[in-house]
Length: 123
Image: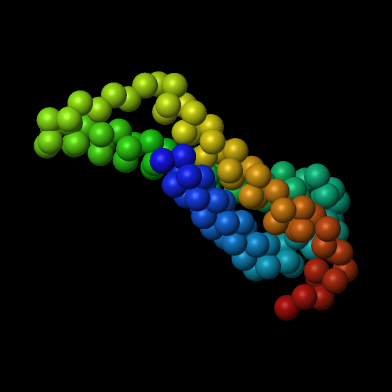
């Protein structure tokens, strides 16, 4: 069960990284303009990292809600008692956010490394 969860987290993390890399490529001019008017590398990293965290928080909320609903349905339909602890819910949510931070950092760092002059020339 742990291996399946690890693979799922890895696939989800790669999905977040791909979304963020595409976002960085689509917004090269925006990054250049922000840097040209004074945004620091840290500002750019924080912007893209916060987007990655919002994606993973949304996924975490959807996952927790669907897990609770499915657990209740299993109990009602099959008569098998399912137990949901707050510890497991919080742990799942925290791991979801951590995956967003870990896999969102590389695209955020790449965005911050862009040269403002080259970014403004990019079309």
